[in-house]
Image 1 (tube, rainbow, N blue to C red):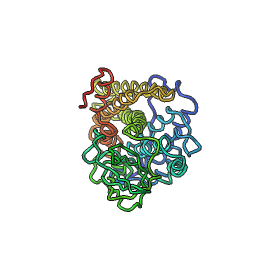
Image 2: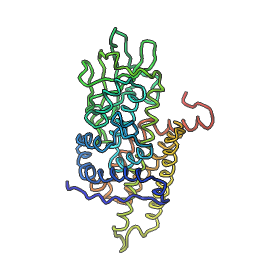
Image 3: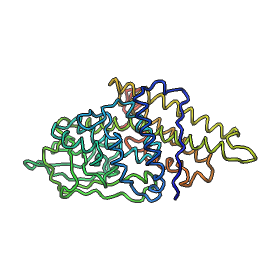
Image 4: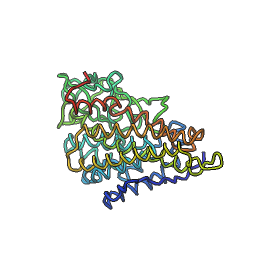
Length: 394
């Protein structure tokens, strides 16, 4: 496969760049350049082969994509949430799997260690996770418990200076390559705690998940715990209950809201360029009404989502954003991205199904992104409960 030249130009229909600081634009530019140089030329090949491009872990560490909002003293970027969002947007513009790697590392592994860990845990793990020396993963979802994490059966029992962990987790991004896993499990009283596991602990395995049609360039696996001895100093001391993992997911969903819009922007940009170059009936297909309708609707939805994300970023920076607002933005971004990918595929005709263009890869990736970290329907019901006061989950 030849390497493609990445011609992406970012749509900004409502001049949102005027709302960004110079630092935020610089962050976006550095990640955009990285994606053009290191991700776009290789990603189709890795997706076709269903292989994880391991080199991106160190590259993203050096670039500062892991834990950008974590303080500098722990190896993080000390950046604001709009900068973080822009990073995720640009990474997912390249590929959802690449952004997943960064989301998991920053929001699901580094954030809980920073927020709920001991000072020793922070010093030990955060710098190596930040610079990409260690890859991490997050174990919440189980084979029989996805949308209802409270039903988890992974559990540990007290054994003196350590605990014995048993159970299994499923659909875990980064798992097969991760050196560190933040795992959520119940104690003997049924209370949920976070434990830091390291690769090599006896009885801890992370088998690769095969045969995915989506996120093919991302490594997904299981986490299996068979009487794993975990030292008590590896338990996160400052949190118990589901608030721990759910607060991590709120941070990650915020990143997805920006990321999915990045995928949508890439599909729109590809379709727009194609519509100007592709001739049928002696004129560019972009001159036909039905193609213009698709493109006009795409840019409208992208613009609305960009505005929603920017405002959410401001609220995150002011510590005013609610998990329910994050749910709305995550669900909206995934919905529009899925539609835009599909319409872009139609504009490209038969070419749209090949790896010569990014569109079909984005389209398949969005099928995972629309489901993980809270399914499409669950996020809808979170909004429903927020506005009515009634819980429709149970």
